[in-house]
Image (cartoon, rainbow, N blue to C red; front, side):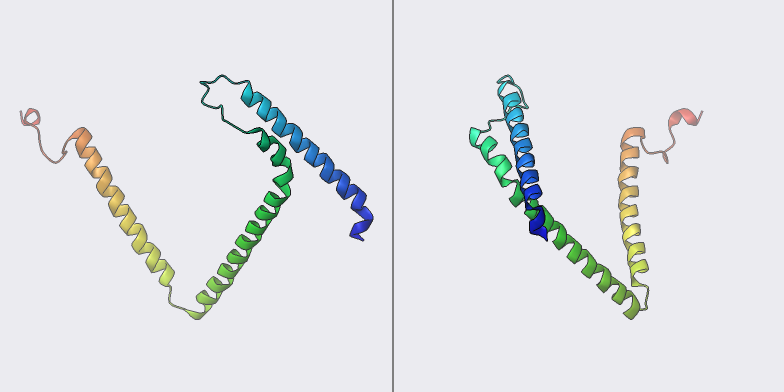
Amino acid sequence: MLLNYSNYICLGYLLFTLFLYGCTAYAYRVNTLRAADDPNKRDFPVAAVLLGPIIWPILLLGVISIFLIKVLFYSIFLILFAIALLVIRKPFLITWLKKIATWIGDRLLGANTVLLKMVFGDPTKKSKSSDR
């Protein structure tokens, strides 16, 4: 049944490849017209224009496979986490999060205190002008 639409698939592939050729050729042309001291100018070989549209199916398959691997790992994590919550009834996660939040908060408060003392001085020490 998929072969019934092979003409449309091939035509779509050809049109998309031609579109990609046009995009890469235009980007190459814009890059060559840039000044030599332009920080955005890159040294692209001409073969990059020719190989760009040919390699897109491989890149597409790579992106799809990485996405599927991420989905698989995420679903395994969700299943194992749900099982862990059912098996272990003690709320270890909440106590662990409280410890981590306290640890991070103490470090931030210490750093902020040091910064305030550096900028404004120690507020606990009384100056001589306030004694008068």
